Structures are given as C-alpha cells and as structure tokens.
Image (tube, rainbow, N blue to C red):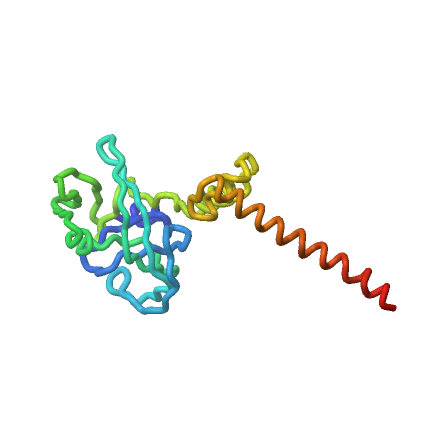
Length: 200
C-alpha cells in the first residue's frame, strides 16, 4: 500500500465512492472550460477550491481494448493531489461497478468491463491505464487557421462560403458591384486634391 502511494503522479485517477463530483487537477486536461470559484470536497472529504468546470475526455485500456469516456461537469481543483472519478456519477450515467478482494470493476451499460482499479482505502481505488485524452482545442484552432489561410481555394469558392452558398453568377454580380463602388470611391478621393489646387 505504501509503495502505491509513493508511485502516484498528478496524472493518476482515483475512483471514489464518496465524492459527488468528478475532479481534475490540471486545466490542460479540459476539452471545454468555464472559470468558477467554489469550495468542494476532495479526497476524504477534505475541502478544496474549484477554479473551473468543464468536460474531460478519458481513455481506459483493458483486455486489449481502448474505451473512451466524456466526463461532464468536471470540477477543476488545481490543489487536489489526485484526479477523482465519482462512482456515483458513473452509476447515474447508466454504468455500474462492484468491488471485492481489493479490486474494483467498472462496467458500461452494455455489460462490457471498461475500467479496473486497485483498492487503496475504504472509498478509493486507483484506476489502471486510465488516462486523459489529448484535448482537441489546439488541433481545431490549427485547422481553422489553415482553412482561412488556404490560398489554393479559388476566389469564387471563398466568397461562396462567406455569402451562404450563393451561385457563381450571383457572386460574380456582387463582386462586380462592389468593385464598381470602390472604383468610384477611389476616383472621388483622387479628384478632390486636384479641385482644391485649382481653387487656390
């Protein structure tokens, strides 16, 4: 038991039958995030400060299979030593679990075993091969920027996207209309200094 505690890292997840909330201790774990200020119960009902709330994707590996979960309404508590998975929340979501001889087994609603944990104390089980999935925010932003800066798209395709799927003829008409207005505007700006010089 002592050896297990010494090998803990900030990335470990503990299944907790006492806590009523999922808790993550690193903000970069979150797929979505909303800042909040609240005091919640951490391990052994110790008070801890929640600084945010959001969704976290996690992956477990068991029996040669990967299982993905989306944890919602997860609290961000940076001072919490461990990440906590609320067994009560999992049960409410349709899963089930049972413990015996120091082993926790979690099942999905279809009966598949999706996670296994080793008992540490009365309420806590250290989950095996249970990790946070890499947030998709960075990749999504890069894809958006790449799309916006993609010079391989033809001009009419860009305008087509921006003006709500108008046809090519309509887009060309709008472009010519805008070009005509800009030309007249530029001509009037050029003509003004000349008129002023003549008047002087």
